[in-house]
Image (tube, rainbow over all chains, first blue to last red; front, side, top):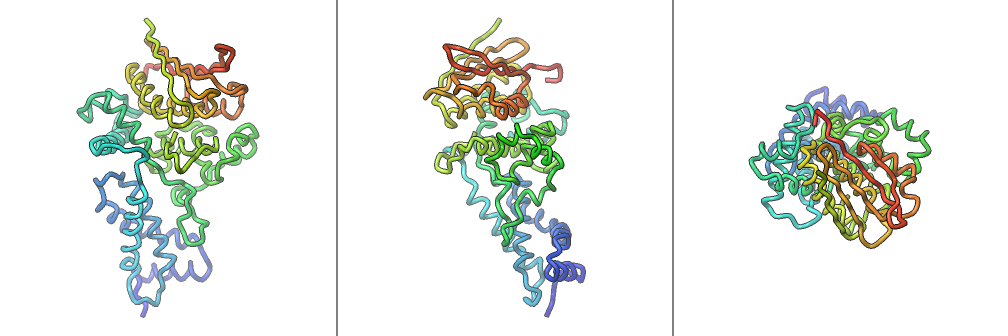
Length: 252
Length: 116
């Protein structure tokens, strides 16, 4: 018995299974993203930005689509929910602070991170420390510490495989490769510095250093927070130095 | 009037967090936007692995309209490394290679614009 979420979903699934049509799966993912958003919101306020939870939830959705068997007799959404939730929970488990951070500072860093995005949208530029302190009703020294705490939070790698084949990565979910990457390939000077970086992980560096986009612009382009862009840039540049040390736990 | 702050931290990545905190405080005094302070700290962190000695030294001049940060002593060739310069130059408003005590240092400058 086949009970998927409507004929359209069945058609998309069958097209993907029969021909490996990635576009069909992408469309299916897109149509089911409201489910991911709904589940991610349940975990809001627990120390992780909702947009990050949506990203990892999308990973769970893709895994569910890849594993779903039409003959199961359950709806795809029913099958996908535990996979999406499982991925979000795993995200919480995996996300660890690289140094011991008091709970109060964790909470403040998350609040300040959100304020950076909110005030950036409101002001049309990144806020100052004083503006953040005023909005958060804390001292400027607390904001400085909170910002550094937020940056010390280990980010997920954009190159982490998110599907069974290992070919699809997080960056596939948030955009196509930029034409600027070709410029990167041609630019021997930059290539020299980036040779140690995984191919997919270079994109954010390309956007910042070759296309000249600001962190806020990259955040908007990739639909992630500015603080997340900051963390990813640190990770990428650390990788360029070949100095990433899992045991060290100290991001740039 | 120029205030100068001197800081010595262990070289390598662990010192970068302390530097980021200090630069955050100094940037705050100049009322710089947080993304610009962040990129100055990122530039400093990018240089951290190139420090020649066991300790990274940082000298920061806080002026009315700009923050000038000197970092060293750096491994020979760091100040002219094209890939590293490409990155660091993009993160701050000015970069100058200087020599101090017969070692290479980089001087980074962040200017406060009218827009902040």
